[in-house]
Length: 163
Image (cartoon, rainbow, N blue to C red; front, side, top):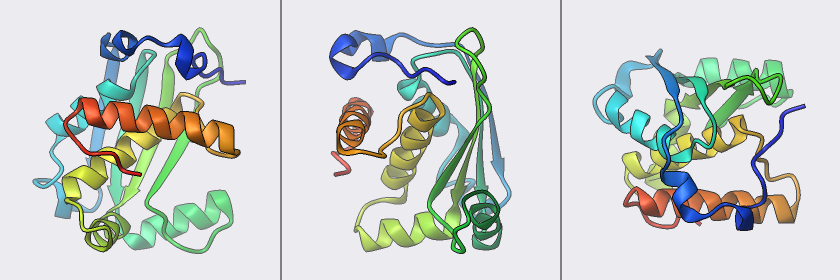
């Protein structure tokens, strides 16, 4: 079973600044965001959220592909903003995951929330990277911990609190 890092209080703020080894692939199956959400920015956002070495793929997909993935793997018949597929099998291995963002949902939510596309993409990528490392928001305590980490990471990157 995947082990997430110790509780937030056990992690000094400097721990987030130490760089973990990262192998990152970025795929634009939906090319609309190629210039608006560039690879260099994605790498910076991913690195800021890593506590462990990782092999990650970040993939931007159309609403059709996002809906198919969400239906196939979560039994939910709609496209969601971000899906994380974690392949991590033990603490000795690097975190290995695919983070899939649906461009249509990302664009729509940024407009609805009156925030920049860059800010929303950064938030969802940080969110996905935390999921890849074992964080979740299934109960109030876990949600508070994950949201606090997301906020701290995003503020350190120059973004405002997403909550």
